[in-house]
Image (tube, rainbow, N blue to C red; front, side, top):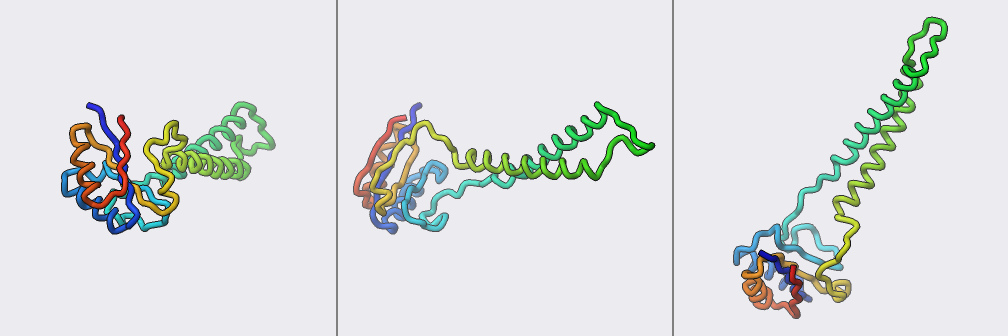
Length: 170
């Protein structure tokens, strides 16, 4: 079963909010609805689904990986090339902490950049539905629905006052 994406263009934010309400009343799940806007509206102002962000996990995992690599690197080097000096311990902790700290920060930074790219769904090979008028102040409501429900979504968008409805077959 193929999905169809529809985009209704609205000039008035009230009409866009009304379209989201009508689509939800018609049984379209909020996960299948998306809002495109060139203006900074607060999250949830159109009643759209707020996705869970997992970005905080990326720096944490990166820091743990960096710390582990720093520990293995410093300890492995000192064990591989034992240099016993005056009865001191083989693993010297104070110099190891500097390398472990630097690797912890490097891992956290690299994983944060990768997390931002991942959470932003970048790079995209195909942009999908879009209209240049969104950058001029229009609001686009995207509906991802099965082919047999596309006419109901189109009717709801038109009933809410969409100026134009674009369709993309998936």
